[in-house]
Every structure is written in structure tokens, then in C-alpha cells.
Length: 426
Image 1 (tube, rainbow, N blue to C red):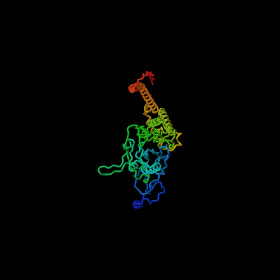
Image 2: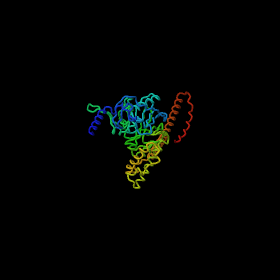
Image 3: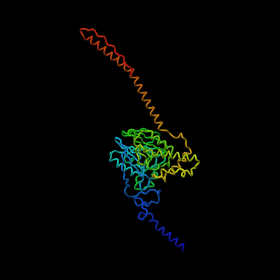
Image 4: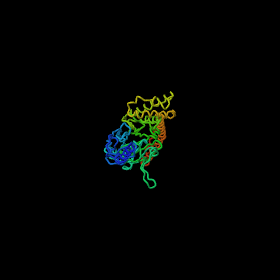
């Protein structure tokens, strides 16, 4: 009897296989269906191309300064419900083009963001500048590459750690599937392919694009393997990306706490009125304060427990950072930040901390000294030039007097030339 029952069950399962996971199946949890009605086995099943409308990100640009607008993402991890819109991206209005800072989590996001920017000024995006390699910040690249012919400026680490579509030995291969492409609904990631960087720099570089002065500042290993921020000196705006977050607990899963502190010190050394974080909504002079405090507390408490002999296995129980419990993502990110910091700070060396404020002061002092030396040199040169002018004046006066004598029939006595007063030194 048991054998017969087993055979019946097996036959029933085989017969039902064509219908399992079919879109006609009623599913109690609708979050398990993508927008096209395809059943999602789990977050890491390869994407399938389906039919259906594009995801509507409902994007609204926020004006930060006279020529900077930004889109602000949700204070969450990337989910199907937010379609990856959980980081901040910005657009800078040049004379003839828009400059994009971090292109967002998908082709469709970039397309919809540009549609909003076009309403403000009908100009193309010819330059896209990327802050770091995490894919929520740059999967919109291929929209600007394909539609606008844009140049992508970004970190070396993007090209080193990712690969786009390839053509090898006569065969086409798809690009790498990142966490965003794997996790989101197809109508959010459709048409998204990896467009890597066209131009990478080894160190901080000053750029002038479409009349806008920019400083693309390298801070190195901070939130990720290679981080950069964008400084607009004329606008006094910093686009900080993920080296600054506020309103939520930061993610240090790929970063270094000392690197984060160095990055923030570099930002604080510059003169700015507005700062746009990678995640969060505060953009005024207090925008970086939360990150400064978080990394300071994190470092001090982990070092203190290490000195007390607490080992790595217990550090997340000893360092809980309770004052951040009400912040978004505390329970997901805080323990891993503590543990990763412990691993890093075991090799802690105070020489790894860079005082960017002092460096900037030194740079300013050198600039002022150079300007003073130049002014003194110009003054000395002017002192030697002036007597030459007086000598030339004397020669002109003498020639005029001689000409007058020659032309006159009656040559009057020539009055003596008054003595020329000495020129005071400048």
C-alpha cells in the first residue's frame, strides 16, 4: 500500500511540474511575483526578460544650489519595493550640458531622472562622474552612454571588479549580474547593462566642464576600495557620496573606519555651504556631523574594549552603540560595522590618520607667501622702471626746445629747464 501511495504521489508531482511557478498560479504573497507575473524563487535567480511597463520611480529633483539638483533615495537597503532607489544622485547644470554625479541603480532610473532634468534645461548629459564601485550608484551609466554618448569618469576599481558584455571568439556574452540586477524586478532592471568607466585618474584632479569648475577628490580606501567626492569651489558644494551618510547608520561592510575618518577630514578642510551625502537628506553645514560623531564613537569604543582584552567573538556584545538604535538600518548594519572595525583596528597606527585641515592650512599659507613674494617682486621692478620714464620725458622736452629755436627768426633766450624732482621710491 505504501509503495502504491508513493508511486501516486510521484506521478502527481510529475504531472503538476508544468504548472508550478507558472504565472497563472495563485500566490498568497504577491511580493513573490515580479511586475510581469513571473514567480521569483529567491533573490538570486537570474533575471528573465518579461513584458510590462517600466518601473515608475516617481522622481522629483531637489534644488541644492543655483546649478545643482539632486534625487534623494529611500533610507533602506535595495529591495524590490524601492527598485534600488536608495542612494542619492545629482545633476550639475553647465553652460551647454548636464554633468551627472552617480547615475543611479538602473537604466530606467537614469532615463526617468534625465526626463526631469530636461524640464529644467534641455541639454544632454555628456559627462557622468562616479563616486565608487557600489552598483546602486552607477548602473544608470549605459543609458547616458548609449543615448547621450556620454563619457564616464570613475574609479579604477569599477573596471577591475566588474565586467560588461563581452564578445569573445565570435560569441557574445552578457555582462556580470550585480546584486541590484539579481535582486530587483525585471521592469526596473530591464535594459540595464554594465557600462564601465572610460576615464580613471590616479589622484585628485581639477576639471572644467561646460564652464563649471570641479575638483574630483580621491580619498582612497574609505567606504569602499576606492572612493572619490566632487567639490564645486565656485558653488561651495560638496557631493560626498557614501563617505558621508546621515539619518541612518552607515554601511562599512567594504570600508575602513580610518579611511572614513580621513575622507571626512578631507571634506571638512574645504570651504562649503552645502553637502549632499550618499544616503540621507541633510544637506546644510551640519550634513557631515553625524558621520563625524559615529566614526569617532565607534573607533574610541572598539579601541577601549580591545585594551580591556575583549576578543573579536564578543566585541559586538560589548560595543552596541545604543544611541543609534533609533536610526534606520541599525540592527542590520551596526553589528557588522563594529566587527569589521575590530579587525581593522587590531593593526591600528595613528600615522594612518591624515590631518587634512592642517594640510589645507599649510597649502593656504604657501599660497599666501607666494602671492606676497610676487607682489614684492613687482614693486621692486616698478621702482627701477619709473626713472626710465622720467629720462624719456627729459629727452622729449629737450628735443621740443631745440625745434622751437630752429623755427624762430628771433631766437629768444631759452629759459633754464627746471630741475626735475627726484622720484620717490615705491
